[in-house]
Amino acid sequence: MINVIGLGYIGLPTALMLASHGQEVVGTDYNPELVATLNAGKTTFKEEGLDDLFAAAVKGGIRFTTEYQQTDMYIVSVPTPYDKFSKKVDPCYVVAAVKQVLSVCPDGATVVVESTISPGTIDKSVRPVIAESGKQINLVHAPERIIPGNMVYELLHNNRTIGADDKSVGEKVKACYASFCQGEIVVTDIRTAEMTKVVENTFRAVNIAFANELARICRHDNMDVYEIIRICNMHPRVNILQPGPGVGGHCISVDPWFLVGDYPSLAKVIDESMKTNDGQPAFVLNRIHEIMKENGITDTRRVGLYGLTYKENVDDVRESPTLQLLECQERHLAEPLKVYDPLIEKDLVKNQYHDFDAFLADVDMVVIMVKHDQVKGSWDKLKGKVILDCHNICLLEGVYHI
Ligand code: SAJ
Image (cartoon, rainbow, N blue to C red; front, side, top):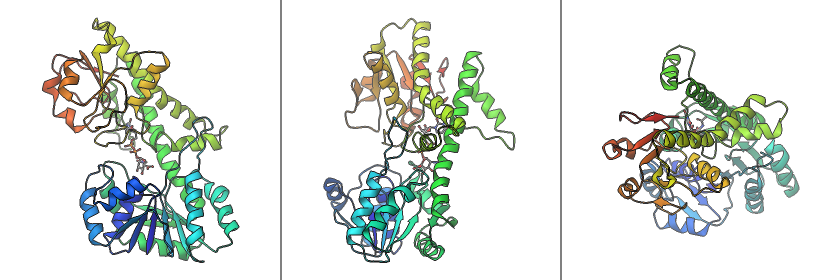
């Protein structure tokens, strides 16, 4: 039996995938409301294919509880927040989960940590806890790699990394993931597995920062950054990502800081890249100001932000560029701009709308912060508005870009 600890964005799909592929799975989460929702047959967030996967897992006998189970294999997928000041990872949830596991598991159990951690966290924070317990534990780090918006597909098809102290333990865990994963599964050591995960996200962050910097250069001299990137990417060895209103989510906007926090005098390119991405919402705010002036819009109450999530077609707002932009406004004691997001039902910010038409009726200028499919099918409704399109997706005439 596998006990999956933490039933969030990663733990839940992983538990469901294992259970729907013949493994006996119990999912544990310390949040009783979340467990009750799952036990009532409902998923806790929206994700393509998740409901079908849930149904298959229920058929496969998955159970959800707040209790840690006594078994020989655990997968820990709890959050790893980071300290915004020191930029270091805070492994408190991982450590707490491992302690709980140690209080129930038998000697010789395998504990797989899937949570993203900074390189060295296992040595610094997890091993001492295990040593203290006196139990012999097979420790494994198998960082997740799935992308929100395409999680189910990527769980099935992505290659994976398994880091283990003991190769034979790594191979055993590999066999378990291979019950559903059709990608290649590499077995390596723990330190390498920790580092690869953070490096993958850092590579993407640096590439996006490069695109954002190009957008600023092109804006300065009125060049079309999208056309320039499109042409450059036709070169066989060039692959530049897209500029945008900022970088959100709990991965690309966070993990690279771990390297800056741990190697401040070495991680220079990474540090500058993260600052560039973090500065993007303020850059957008500046663009809004310029475009308002150009169009004689003097009342910020007539300006609305479309999109509150950190990226398109997900309902996750963690570190979202729109929230960053609103925070930036707040620091200047300004009344926050109006906001609408079709995927956010809850009231999360001031001046938030839940009806697209009502939102549009109250604004003269729309800033497309997120490229949800919904807006792509609604260009007719935006006719006549001043539009700042931060993603180059709007097909209307006279649209402004970042
Ligand atoms: N973004 C851009 N320009 C781009 C691509 C993305 O500005 O060209 C922005 C997005 O709008 C978003 C942010 O970057 O705000 C991050 O989005 P994302 O789609 O790039 O990535 P995440 O954070 O959803 O997921 C990443 C993935 N990592 C990589 O692609 C290397 C995923 O595979 C990881 O599992 C995930 O982080 C994680 O959990 O670490």
